[in-house]
Amino acid sequence: KVNRPPLFPKGLAMVRAFASSKRNTARDVAIYFAGEMSGESGVDLGKYFGNICGAAVTVRYKHISDQISRNRRLKGMFNRVMNKIINN
Image (cartoon, rainbow, N blue to C red; front, side, top):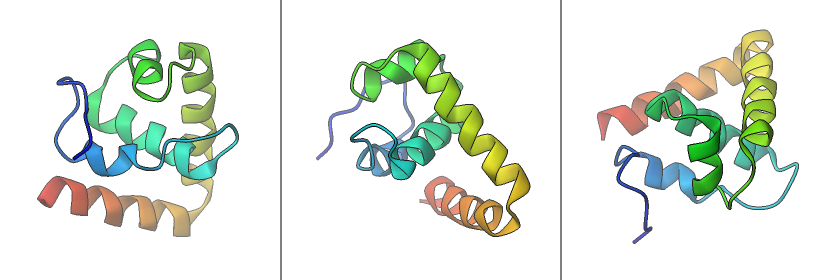
């Protein structure tokens, strides 16, 4: 069982498994999912993802957001995963 702060919805425990090293696309996507689902600040998300600073969270969030907006395939995958998290 993954320990998670109470501010995150239940489904985010699945996303937390992706958090790891720098420049990790899976971690960046996990940050994006966490931000979308929780609405928490970059500072709060940073604490959850290994005490990274809020600015780093914002940069990675914006990077993935930009990729999703430009890449239809990635947007479809994001929407499918989001629906699975929400519906479980």
